[in-house]
Length: 329
Image (cartoon, rainbow, N blue to C red; front, side, top):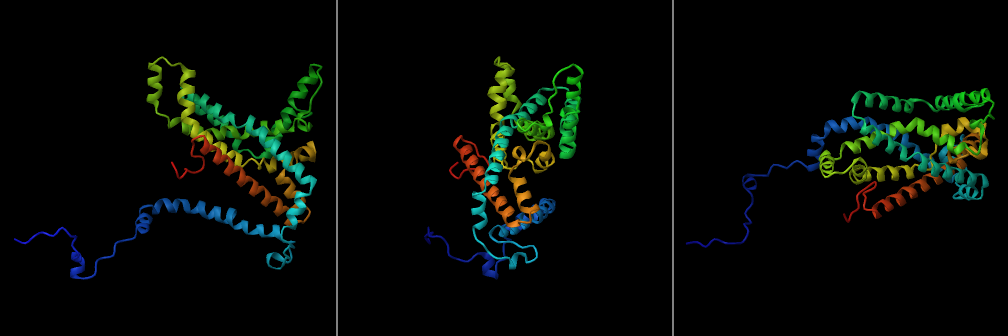
């Protein structure tokens, strides 16, 4: 009998014996055919992002030039880090940066918890009609322009607004909040809460919907009340989303509302309302010093990136994914 060899056969496959094997389609082509409809749906967003977000980044080269609008990018003289040196020795720039950080800190403390609290409240409303109506009312200010938002606050809190009219009618001293520089950081935070808090609860409501309802049933069967279920089930179930939104919020901390500050700048003065965005606009665009404004914008972008990376690192330290999953998990 012929012994059966344990060595692997080196004979060519049947396809090769009869001729060249049919080429197997590449994996990326298979995935392209499979996800073609999804890719087509995302194409408009990609084009929009490329045209209005990534293409303008080419203009950052002006931060290293003495840019002249008539000479253009190619013929404006290169000055290296000169604009950044001017920036770091400008007292007005440091005042704008400190104002930005203070406003961001106030909004982080007073604004960030509001959408979470609203999402928890809406989640407790059992009647779907009441919940839909209240959500619609809370969502609505998101679609208002900042001009309309400031106008509404002016009619309520301004010198001739409803609050001061009622105070005068009852013999009390009036308080024009809209022109009070000391209260400006709380005013803009209140405006941001009224305008955006309702829209911000969408993500947190989605996180609440993803929590397994059987956990609540088991906890209720064990005698846990609403507060214990909230503390031990709801908040831990929302923790990853809360951390993610906090990281994104910190990355956007230096953007505290250009239009909002621009509209109210004259009422409260430059000292209270000057932030990095308005600094780049007034001392860059308005004064035709585009290179200086571009340097301020680039400085803000680099600092925002550092804040995002630091916040993401902190999220990893607490065991959360943050913006991306760690390699060692």
